[in-house]
Length: 314
Image (cartoon, rainbow, N blue to C red; front, top):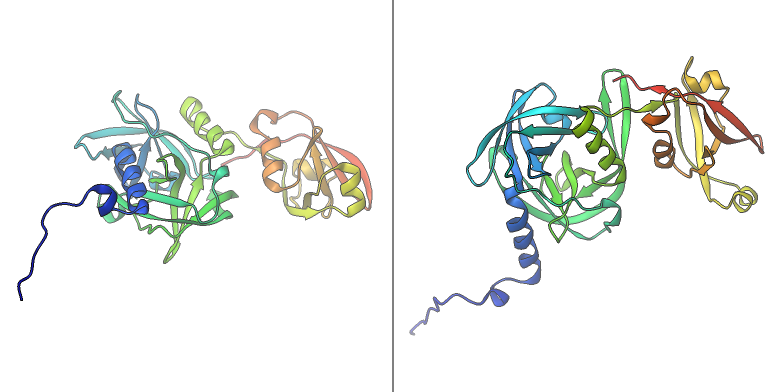
């Protein structure tokens, strides 16, 4: 029996399904923006975010380095200086002298939905420009970080099943339009990767690292978690929940102000807080040394507590 072999290439619309075409478009758009890093403590990845030399990466990738070497897919190798690092968000900003980088567009992780396509680009095990794809497996995860004695939970971390391996840290996690929605940071297991989200909170961190080389955090000395309000209070305050104080650190601003465990914080300077992220968003570095009014529910009644935050030492 004679066999006929067809060697003519199929049109793109026939050769590649919609999923493949979406991943290919993201790879073509974003790969020139992703660099392979060689640092003192090992390797990783970074993403160009401005044409005049700024790169974004993970703080743990450059934690023991002042300068790193960045290699791009076009063959360029550049020296980059670590100009700012924030271990408590696991983000760092680098600067090269090159003013012709191909910057990536930053997206908004708050708009992601579970099941949405995401593409990871990085340099696992030193294989530069590697592309993997998957979906958003979950949103709203928390990631513990540490700097010296200070610890913090990064909120709204993105969980994905896109394959991540050592060397992907600091690389881009992008949506189907090629916008960077996260910085890959950890491999928590097979098919379980985590990325620090690009959102309003992390944009502030990035901006501060670019301009000041550090990010100031206010600290009042409590551990807390979200708690729903009783129906009567929820109706009266027109909000569903608050932040319950679980622990008050001894001799902290919160302790000196009289906050107690089981207090329920419902607002900061008149702005409602319904979760820990709201509380962190309201008590910013700008309020260090300033008097901040907390409205709390204690034993069924509402009262005001004035606290003066200090700068978190890292």
